[in-house]
Image 1 (cartoon, helix red, strand yellow):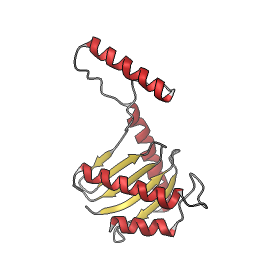
Image 2 (cartoon, helix red, strand yellow):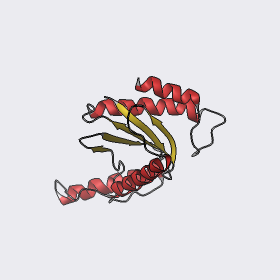
Image 3 (tube, one colour):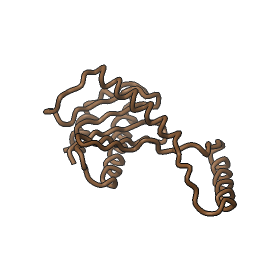
Image 4 (spheres, helix red, strand yellow):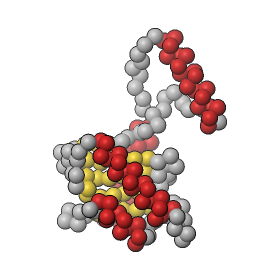
Length: 166
């Protein structure tokens, strides 16, 4: 799998990190990256509202399962979740020229990796996102000079990203 680019968006959809991992490709301008980040944030938000309307099994069993799951969610989190919500949202876009994979953390941070087409199995991407989140946690969130939702300017983080994608 060849990774072309890495983007990190804050929970409001702002671009806080951008790294061209393959220097030989045509580059986008800074404004183009901001537009891309905002567009992906919007599409991800819309995708998280879409659900399948196909139900299997008996309606009574589905109602009981739904009620018990909703009760446990409310008891555990104190918040009700709409039945018309899709927590994962948009996860992957595949084209003939590239694949775009998105991972959203619990805090709303979005990691976007643009890779070569047919980049491998989804499990490999999941593992890459897991390692990426660990690097982010260790080198950005533990940095005493970093302010949340601000652009990431860390040479240590850049170095670890280069190691991760090498």
